[in-house]
Length: 519
Image 1 (cartoon, rainbow, N blue to C red):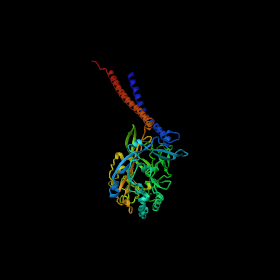
Image 2: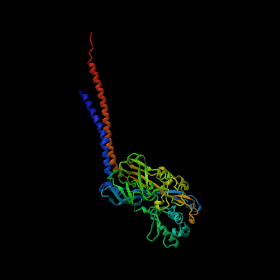
Image 3: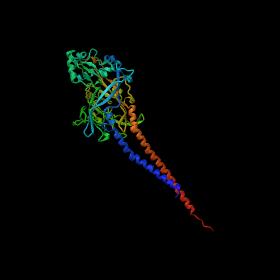
């Protein structure tokens, strides 16, 4: 056998070995190595970097508030006009989340904690807006108190009418002039003790049924602020999986407030927990690691007392990092009712609310009364998808690109790369029997504000994900496919060459052995 043929055979074998090595590394060796590295970077164990990030988010969330300024307050209150609103914002706050009272179980399989939130106003990002800008908004505390009294003690409405100015102050009206500072965090005072006997009677009743947004000051005065109760407080006791037992369960909720199911919404007729009370998923700080394409995600949000289902919505990149996109399922707000097997959300607890014949709000809206203890309605910003209610207010511009819940998650680690949880709070406004300040009102649906809460991952965390995961995956992928492609190409080329060479060699042999007869 000549030397050239030996070389061809050697390179054919080398090509096959490289191809086989690429197959083995790409489908048998690298995947478990990558999986183990991912597990090492997500499972919560004391003393690790990920545990420190779990205790305190390494960067603040953004909390952007857009307030709906009523531009025609006099016409609304005195002439029965529908509100004309103008969005003012964003008022930008940094939200810091820290976990306290952290306890690991004896086997390290679960973690119990409370999480405290702190809000800090960001002057630079809010500019040119200021917390002291004058705004006209729905008097949420007045409307809530009046609707609550109407639904529980209607006989007292005439008494309350005589004491409205003593309860809410001399400038009591259904549309009030205030500032973002007062309305959101500092507070608006009412129910001053000792002002009038009727006022004291009503205010004592209010104090027995007041919502989280109300606070009793040291002198007995009541104060209302939309988000003060969220600042420097916790949202209950969570127990979550550490991931030690099953990595894909990392940070998935086991119980909240000691319960595996909520008890806010109505139960099923057989007294079993309803789908509305389901507690599932995480609190939104992290998603399941090791995600697969098309997988559904869940977030339990204590502010709205329910689990939100997120559906896979394609793939995208953030700062060069590939991610899975998620959007809120139609079951969140658009598809609620008996035909969707979630009529437990149809509580119909707002007196005089605009509802369907079956008691459910029209699509795109959720009655938060059982959760908030106040007649609030949840929608997407600018009433996106809540078409029926758009006719009861003017000045909105719903835009799917700006007003949808939108989350982009790194699928291996389950880290949100970019997240925007966008929801809006509203109230019905209408005449209330015997209450003079409401008699000129038209029935309307008044947006109060909407919030964009979430994160856009900072440079430090982006660099960490790139170095710890993306770059490793790129290198391993390059090695795998390079060996696979080069080996296959070399093997095919050399095998082809070997076959051609053998065919030619055989042809020459046959020609050389032929000897014609001579005459």
